[in-house]
Amino acid sequence: MKLQKGAELMFDCFNRKIDYLRISVTDRCNLRCTYCMPAEGVVMMSHSEILSFDEIADVVRFGVKNGIRKVRITGGEPLVRKGIVNLVSMLAAIDGIEDLSMTTNGILLTQMAADLRKAGLQRVNISLDTMNPEKYAQITRIGNLTDVLSGIDAAIAARLKPIKLNCVVQHSSDEPDAVAVRKFAAEKDLEARFIHLMNLETGEFSQVEGGEGGHCSTCNRLRLTANGLLKPCLFSNLGYSVRELGIAEAFNLALKNKPKSGNSSQTHNFYNIGG
Image 1 (cartoon, one colour):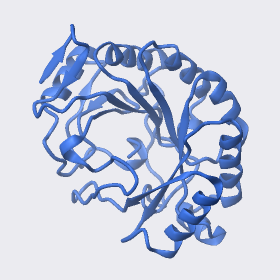
Image 2: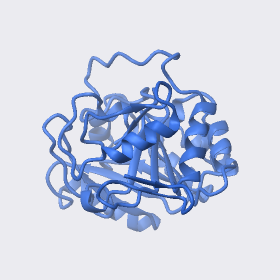
Image 3: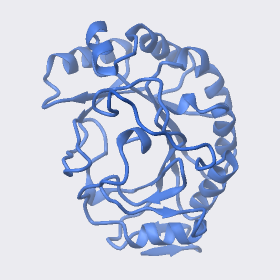
Image 4: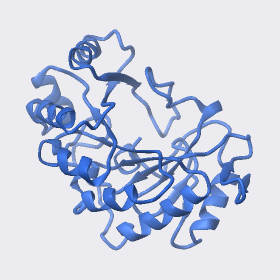
């Protein structure tokens, strides 16, 4: 592990330059996707466990001072976090962030896209697994496809570009739902990414089609959970509390212990780490 203050760069033990921080701001969501959350729901974190916006901004400032250039806000569903536009504004004001983005299910973008853009958000990834309204309702359990499509149009109007559509596939991007999403993306001049269904407990994952995820040899990211654990790898149980250890030590340990490749995890789920 190398944290080079003078050079403002962070490297892990495998000489991978770490310049990307993904931030889960909540474990709550307004959907209940079958591959992400059990039908009966989950026990949510208490408000006292969740990092405040000031705490998140402090972590980001330290990270940016030491080489983080790309920041992505995730959830749960980040747009259900009260005051999320204010957090975007706080992060956008940090000098050195070159790419400030968000992954969202798009349900609330119709109301919030313009304000997010004004606050400094640059772009969004929007989850869209099918163009079939009935299939969408089945996958999300409570979602309405019309809401997402309206959110996508709002993001286009707000110029939150490039807009990328995240499509989860069972086996292949040649599946009918994925083909329909690809066609829709082309018609709207958007980018489509295909994410093969993953399993944290068994360590099943693969490279993202159209994206960088799953490329362990070039992984450049750390993850901050909503309750303040800095995690070096999605498929790892390791996590270091920025509250208990302090921000600098949490970064040091995450860099030092970032594995060469992901294995498995029993300490978190997709709904509370943002994938």
